[in-house]
Length: 67
Image (cartoon, rainbow, N blue to C red; front, side, top):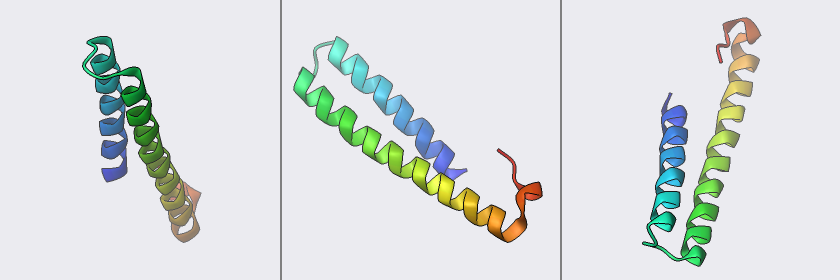
């Protein structure tokens, strides 16, 4: 549940970054760097989610898994 919340927070952050760019509060370069870093964090969260799901399946089998 924590990872799903973190993923939602990253999505909100990406939307906020786009809004900052459209309001010209950040430069295109700053937006690109911010977006790259947010995607790195997002990718890490997705990787962890996959690892935890794999471990859950290994321990409890796929019948106990809910997506």
